[in-house]
Length: 209
Image 1: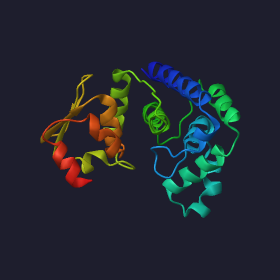
Image 2: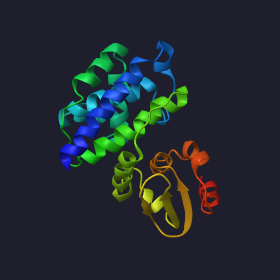
Image 3: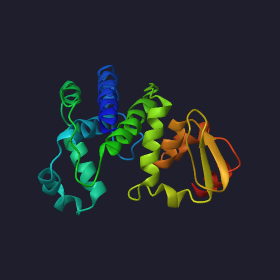
Image 4: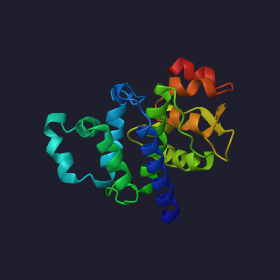
């Protein structure tokens, strides 16, 4: 099973490299959907994830107040400062690497790429298509996680149903939509997901946002 996941991770990395290679210079500095990150920061993050070390994380931890999200942001900004062509080359070069930290697994790499591909593409009016079945695997991982998204707690009282693949979770009023819209919802990108969601539970989402 892991081999199948890693093959998908490789394909997603190469697809994102193709997307990035098509961007105009000014698009690299545009805001992404990932709060506080430019497109180049998201790209830098994706380039460094396959090779990031504990030592690298610890080196920026003091200035980030030892906050995991701030550490992640500092590293992303550092890596995003590289020239665009260098970032693209690194993503391609590292596309087949299979390293993860001890606290994560291949499914984290998968959903990270699924979501960050949208973080780059959507604000620029671009498309980054991901098969619904692949997105479903990312949904499974995000739903079972706690930090940082806490999706089960945040979306308690709702029944989430994918309309393009076999995926349903939760209890309560239904919110239905494509798998991609649901994974954007689960990862806190509610405003971007909302136009593609339907059902009686959508009103509850609006009240909570």
